[in-house]
Length: 390
Ligand SMILES: *Cc1c(COP(=O)(O)O)cnc(C)c1O
Image (cartoon, rainbow, N blue to C red):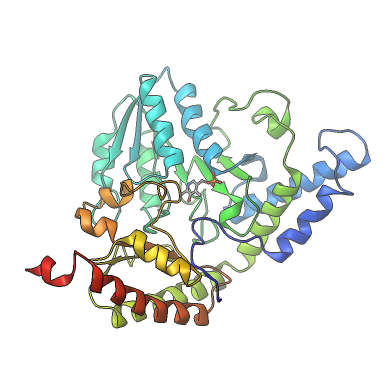
């Protein structure tokens, strides 16, 4: 059976070039970058090459990149680090109500320690209001953390404007750019970003490696204590193979960024047009103007999203209800709740995320199957159109 992977926002396959670059680090290039002899020294210089590649993709300086074990660790480190570093100034953090769990649950943890967190609401397209942001800032505010682009509905936030507001008020600005990196042009200097979280496995690199960009001049305490790795700010022997893979993935993403955006958004638009044309009563969550190139999130009215996923799975089509972390439970995601959608529409929402290995044939197959599956589910749905409209 044909298999169509349309869940690139959950994770991406490792590209062949990336894998080939990584393999020698498990065998002949196994040295520890902290060792002072041959293979250690070459490991150290390879580590620094990878760091430079990741830095280049976001317009940072190599010395501002700190490798972590994942995007989640980077989010934890940035927020907890800022909270500890700025405790003397204040205890107030501003974030949004559509953040990834890695950020949101870290803020909730800090609330238990006495920090105060403002969760900005978003509009019906998933964007925060800059006015609300500015109004929320007090003399106790120490950090603004707003994600670059949302993992469920693909909405891109007004990052540059947030950076300007943060700077004007002397508040640090962190952004979770795990979904945006490699999908949107990013220059941390031009955007006024003080800290930024990224992850390799969302850009065709391996799982288990991420990074935190920390602008020169921003000082936060170490998150993992121990040896002197990562300029004494993140201890633990480096995941060299993973980091080298991240470097290669970043290099490829940088070289092909424009082409990638054009191709993937073209496929996405084709898919959306076809679905809207061929299936009645479908809506789109999020903004079409400020959206990740590969993301589309549909509401298939009168249908349970979970049933749709199961029937698609049976046809080899892999998509998701949005957040991989909440898909095991039946509670609708906090992101869809934040859009103020009625309960039924939240349950009818499905995310498709398209990537570099998606083809037009994959999408054509998916469209044909979707037409049939939706028709079948609507025929048996207690939420069918007559009841809903009557
Ligand atoms: C995937 C993801 C994360 C977590 O990254 P991991 O490397 O999987 O820990 C954080 N934030 C966003 C927006 C993500 O999409």
